[in-house]
Image 1 (tube, each protein chain N blue to C red):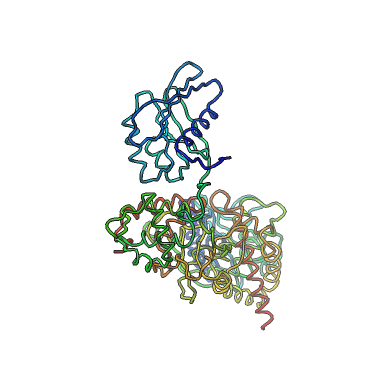
Image 2: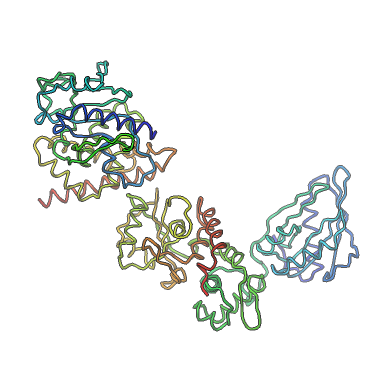
Length: 275
Length: 361
């Protein structure tokens, strides 16, 4: 597993290197971003991911080089499956997803409209709008710096933006959840454990106040209530618990995540009332 | 059904024989008979010839005693072994044999039976294993008799003082240090002496070997038996709760169990924090704890008394957390759930190897 984590990070660095001309427009999202914020959270499930997710801000995206050219030149090849628009496979087999937040992705169903780049070089994703608002720059390097000394200064989505994105992802797949979705729910638990409620609530307020993220953030707060804050038996709470089956304490995780979600909902209510 | 208190050793023997005969499997036969075996202290010896269904025979040599105390066991075992014929099974018959006495007899390999029905008899040929459970408390102990257990606050105070300090005690010093009443201190000391946990040298009392005393006290002190207990969940986990404990809120407490044991022995990550507090309500409010019985990870324990002995000789841990005394922690772990008894054993092992670090002079 540790090896797969290292491979995923290597492929991510490869992608950042390929997109170095566009680095200003790139925001790290997904599990690799989550773990940037949750290093101190003591949870039973080990950090684990086999891919890399990058959100692209089209307002900051230049014309050259073309995304598809840059990725191919760096040794990536486009995943040929129709359902895998925007997925690029690195030489080591790791998938890197390039995604544009739905609200700023132009027309299209899966594809994007950001000329002059190819409409299939990136995929639209709803929920990532929050990452455009809530992010901060960090230095990212390999898990084994001795073997791979490359580092990149890159924007990393903040915890609130990542929770919004994960809530939308879980909701989008609620009709046919898989074990991988349990891990997404557990990532929400991981972030709620690692980040104190009050600063998290303030970040959520910022998302609710920014026009580009307001709709997805408002929807996410509703999803947080229904999927987690409603109690340990709510769908998301149960999924987060299920992720710890065998290795941890599913009951305690389901109880804890629902309490922490309720705390966040209450803190948001308090802040909205005050303002 | 233990019946009346056996008034004589002969009665003890009669009861013992009846109990044994009653528990022999079908097909086995027994013929009672008295033999002159010449046991030094024996008031009334008996023999019981046992025949297995296949015709193999053995003889139970039964030594009756009205009172057997733990300190006597080794001497009795030596004597019985010395008097034993090759094919005989030596059986000690007592009026009532307490759990520590039964444990010591088992350790010495001596079969026993008591008039309340406690029984453990083993033989190699023919292969015999007779075991039954009678009373764990002397049903015939009269009012005003000495204490027969280490239950309760006075015993805990005396035992904790004897364990926490390595020294000879004049009784006045022990009363003062333990905080137990004069009468209770005498009663507990009397019991500990009879059970062989405490020695009297001149006018001083001394515990040479603290481990059996710690274990005996632990057996008589089920965790939280005399305390209020409430369960809570810290949703960010025990580690987060630890930092809150060490943040210096003015709340009296003493951590016990696994979390405290880490102060001395690294075992495994703590799943639940057990904390003695004078008031559950006040501590829960100060620490922002939420009641939860489904998956609790913080358990608050409120002893009956505000100045309970659990708050004595506490230790400020490396992480600024106040831990109960190591003897209290070991006692609680031995009685704890799940893997805690195993942690208790690991802690006792550490205590054996590092007595000078925890036992005060």
